[in-house]
Length: 483
Image (cartoon, rainbow, N blue to C red; front, side, top):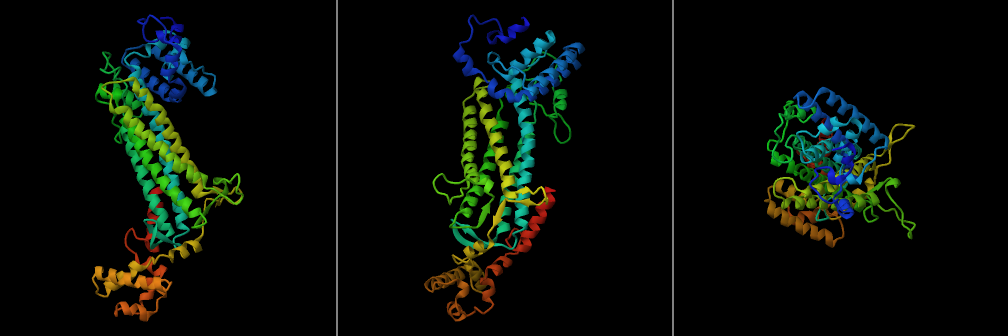
């Protein structure tokens, strides 16, 4: 086959076909205009494969040198934007191979010895996703740090804790934020776990059955950094599974979906807190937009859009699961459809994390170095809201239990006290002692300490509780963990 024959898609695999592919089918089946982002992974994998072929005596040293030289030039061309991506060559792999053959001749044709596009693309996607996970994990760390920094400034700020979106009990605003730190911490753990299973080498599985060439797959795995924590090479052990497995892509998208769900929950709270009915926080103007008709509006577009993009990512997860559910072994053309949802999931998650890091943490002032913007807290509004809804009712029940009353009886007694407070249009802490003693004679004046918001907060001084002492301990733990 001549060098320019690889420029003809119908001749890229064999001379079996008697007519060229139609233009419609060509465009329908081509992937080059979205999978070209895999170029770096493709070149990296190809160079590791070529080095192994030479070490095994399958190709000569001169061929290896030519391949390395040609790939270096292709890298420069792609980085410079001068590389010509051709639809006729269908995908990133054939485009690079055709250009390599054009540059170095027969050495380029020998590169594909012992592999197929099936194991090649599986390797490329794994290498690419691994590098993207390595960007996402630090972003999750940065978001946690930003939340911890805001929490550290607001340990003593009291807000209403909600269940069913009804005022439940008073909590520290810092404690509330640290709940999201826990969520994003789990997200980071999941990403580390997904990376471990992504970081396994399919290359050498060939089309589906392995190859007759004496490949050293473990050498390639070491070269590509596909090793475990002990440095042992991680290689897909079954050739059929190696070329057809997309569990790693589904796992990643599942982890990304859960991370986006956490972002969406936080977004929903920011949207509520920013509304005039709450007035708990403000976010910097650069993360909001105005109205085309109502000049007084500041709309929380970033949290709203993040909430919307969560559905997009979850949709990609459903799409990938559905893509795989009916596929027999081994590789099928269906798997071309794994890339766009995976690519978009990565892009959406990274962009969302980056903007939330800045939105929560603010930006450094060039003059002072101090971070400005981010979230501004209205502590007064939060505390006033916590006074509504009888948030310390459970504290009164706990008080009665400590006086010897069974909890269920204490619960009923407090229900009557709340009813009296509703009738008098006042808080429990504003009921006269004589009225409270009418519900239970053991109530004394020390009850007002437990009925205060601050007293309620301080009383929950157990591990994981909202007492400021516990919140500060959690902040210290997160600081040490995040470095």
